[in-house]
Amino acid sequence: MTDALKTVQQAATDLGVSPNTLKRWTKDFAPFLSLSGPLANDGASRRLTAEDLVVLGRIKERLASGSSTEEVVEQLHAEGRGETASLTTTHESGLSTQSAGFVMLTDTLRAMIENQQTIQNSLQVNRNLQGVIIQDNFNLKEENMKLRDRMQKLEQELADLRKRDSDHRLLLEQRLAFLEQEARKGILGKLF
Image (cartoon, rainbow, N blue to C red):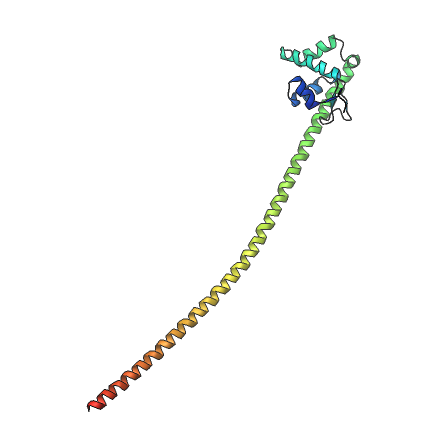
């Protein structure tokens, strides 16, 4: 890019307006500008010359003074600007309307494509999240089965301990009863 050509961002800074405002002006006043670049309708590759900046400066002044877009167009025609466009005004106004319609349709389609892409990305994220949730569910079921098995094992060990404790207690009670009987026999045998 040479110093003579400026991007929309650079030109907007020079003129003290927002890039969106400048883009709108380049569309509204295109017949009066010598837009350069591979794609004149693409804001990213649009380039403006020093003469374009002068014209845009006048446009800014006139709009700031209260003139409408149509009045500014008439004033620019009166100054002799955009003469090639004024030779075929009827034909170009029809083309301009068609071009504006085409640009609007293109912008609408581009927005729809971007929205569809966003929705597809969102669906992919949801699918990935659902896969993670399903995997976590399987992992939790596996952990649940392990815990259930461990609980059953612990319950079985507790039941075995209770049975051993009960058997041991019964054995001790039988021995104690036997010893008491022996002790009574021994004491009674000594007494009689």
